[in-house]
Length: 448
Image (cartoon, rainbow, N blue to C red; front, top):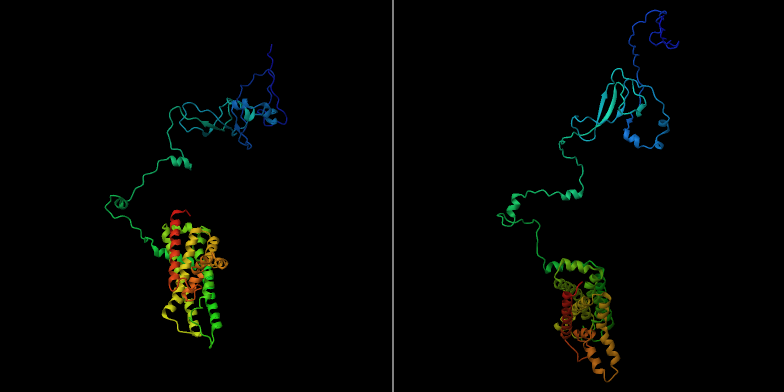
């Protein structure tokens, strides 16, 4: 009785590479040849495949089935991968791994053991399945159980708050500075820039720059000269004649000066009221905290400028009248009062306007007040002269008015009982002193 023969797989006609394709089939009843190990087929060059990270089992379990792509849901078992397949996978290192920093990624090549088949399932194979020969794995290494070496963290930029919390570094003070400090042996530091204490001269230079750099100065003084000289020439032409004798000869030279005075009074007001209007007075008092010095400098500059311009124009008019009119020659006192005295009178009147501007601190109000002071007494006296009871009061108004005092300097007063000679100038000086005194007091007490 013979044992049944085991069937042998017949190679297909197209499979020429199968092992034993050309060997003859042994006859029936012949003993089986010894089993030979299978011949490994030659390794083919694997096709390049993209690297894919092998997800952890915990992450796969957490993903809902509806969020997985349809291709993965319908994926069929794939054949074993060839040798040299690259697989990116995170693995937990053993406890005895060398110490590295947390989160270190290590790329490691592992060879598959002999005789184990390749895992199926593609990149989603279970973590414990054997890997192909030449598989590259990328695994995260955890730091060892022992304390890791401490290294200073790299901080490319620190916020301003962290920098502020850091204690300031101790700066080294040079020895020369320490010696020059309090209690040192070296002399104190001296600035190379000259430091000078301010005085009245600096305030005068400042006020002179202001008054000559504004247009109001040119217009007011220009109109004063034009009216004084122009009206004086016209008066001399009207009174000139070989048969007419005029006494005093300089008695009619003040008509143009009276009208010019009405134009120069605004200059005295604007010297200080314009700074109050523009706010420049704050800068002035900051540069020169002494307010009395500021007002004194303004008064000196205004008085000098007005006096020089008025006196020069008065001299020109007096020379013309003395040369064109017939009459007794003027005395030295008459020449002095007609030239210098009238110049002083107009300059002091400008100081009175400066005091009014300091008290009122308003250009229009101060100019109106000064114009009323010059013209209002004469106008009020004209209306009161007709009344018997008011006639003495009206006479006093005329005698001490500005036009009558100016005419008295030229020996041509409206009222013969009023001031004469140099008395009109003294009266105006007294009134101006009172007003300027009030201006100084108000300037020191009031705020700007």
